[in-house]
Amino acid sequence: MSTTIGEATTGGAAPPPIEVEECRGVLRIYSDGSIWRSNKSSFEVPVNDDGSVLWKDVLFDATHNLHLRLYKPASPPTSTKLPIFYYIHGGGFCIGSRAWPNCQNYCFKLCSELQAVIISPDYRLAPENRLPAAIEDGYASLKWLQDQALAEEPDTWLTDVVDFSHVFISGDSAGGNIAHNLAVRLGAGSGELAPVRVRGYVYLAPFFGGTARTGSEAEGPKEAFLNLELIDRFWRLSIPVGETTDHPLVNPFGPNSPNLEKMDLDPILVVVGGSDLLKDRAVEYAEKLKKWGKKVEYAEFEEQQHGFFTINPNSQPSKELMLLIKKFIAQNSV
Image (cartoon, rainbow, N blue to C red):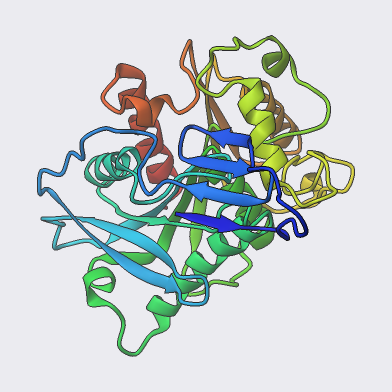
């Protein structure tokens, strides 16, 4: 499928457009402003649906035709209600979907291991929809949950099994950035989503940026799964036109970013791979917030690359991460 942004060239025989940007084979942008997107995933892996987890799609934003995918254990406990765990997919704000098999497989794993209802929302992608569109859509998916909690005739597939007062928001890469910006927008204990109550956030290799290079960005291997050239390309396509990577939605500590030191924030778990080019930004984030007295945990998985937990969810580091998330939920559910 293809779309066009900008105006087409007029007058005379225009030269055929040339490809000017490409992202993982599923997004191509051409010199005339046209955009091609593949309907396929860049991760061609089988979906591991063994029936132990039930799932379905729900429209949460009719205006932008955005859906989310719900997951729940096929045999949930009858004596207790389940926590809710948001999983917001990554992709540099430019690619990815709740329906990609790597995303679905990880949500199966999260649902089964955490014994939680998983909510995996889509959001508008760049460059057709630059930031802050993705952040706004993440917020809209939370408002949808609030609507369910308040509805006179809610979707009982969801509401019969969940505890709306135990919600955790996680995101992978760009999704981790969205989770951070939701944490900043909501603050701690604001009551804005009542009766929904957010208990904590899990940032999985959060996609933060800045105009000053970090050591891990500058020195990271060019063959990395998320290398510097691709990082720059994602930002080039997703930040507002005319802005830099010091934009408040990109750099948590940019010149015009909110002052996190003075902000009440819910507990946060920051996770990153030791070989991830984004590592230094995750370290800086966790260290600064800890210094300011925020409840922040930092976990680094040695020699692991960006997205290791979805690339190989059955690896030992991925299993250790799952236990860490499970512990974080338990500690912040009392």
